[in-house]
Image (cartoon, rainbow, N blue to C red; front, side, top):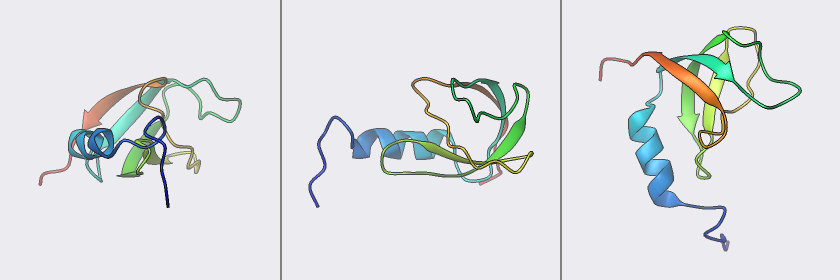
Length: 81
C-alpha cells in the first residue's frame, strides 16, 4: 500500500508513541469536534496509530482519538515502564 507522506509519517508516530506510551493518563482541554468529550474529561492512552493520532479510552466511554497538532490536552501521569 502506498502512503502519501502528507498523511503518513512514521517518524512522527514513533515520537508520539514514546511521548504518550500506552497507559498515559490525560485530561482534555480542547477538542474541535461535535462529538468531543466534555472539557476536563480524563482518559487513558491505548496507542498511537500510524497517522499520529493518539488513541484514547475516555472516562465517559468515548473512544474519539486526539489529533496532537489540533487538540489540547494535559498529561496527568505516565506509566512506570
